[in-house]
Amino acid sequence: MSFRTAAMRGMRLATVTPIRNRPAMPAAAVAGAARSFHSSRPVFIKVGDPLPDLEALQENNPGNKVNLAEEASKLNKMILLGVPAAFSPACSAKHIPSFINHPKLQDYDLLAVVSVNDVFVMKAWGENLDPAGQSNVSKDFATSTPIRFFADPTGRFTKALDLAFDGSAIFGGDRSKRYTIIVEDGKVTSLNVEPDNTGTSVSLADKVLG
Image 1 (cartoon, rainbow, N blue to C red):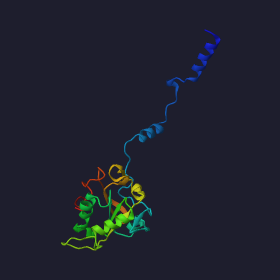
Image 2: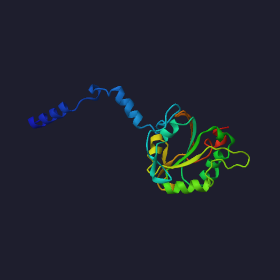
Image 3: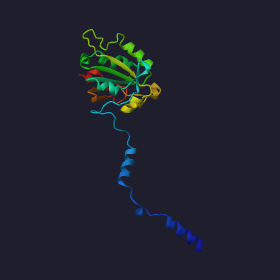
């Protein structure tokens, strides 16, 4: 064996560390790597939390910014409905009317509806669903509980709740999952999120209010 060949082989041996002698990866790093490959994350908002403290919503016009956390802190009990799209069939025919026409709505100070739409669409939708400006339109009972329609044009509020989903296939972009949240004294007391994002199996009034 030539001197040059032996020298090169020695260099390779010197630079390669045997696997058995390599330092082990710290346990924290292993746990972090495992978390990064987990398929789902815990929901940001949970029972006991306040609503996100953001001036991200709009009502009636782009200049009227609303912080729903501040609104909720002034009320005893509030119902918050998140919907995938204004004027969509399930939202217009099932989700919102199930609360508007429920007798227990009168026990709440506000019925708030939020969607990732522009404020003009939300205003028109509100006028369509509640033309008299009064939330309960049933002939069997009456309530003064107001219903307000809030636009989340950038999705900032919805993303802060961690309740956005990719609705590109149907709606063209990120939208809100369908949910119903009960808020009492500014804190979440009940959270009902549709497991398939857009269905109506757990968020309708009869499931939430009884």
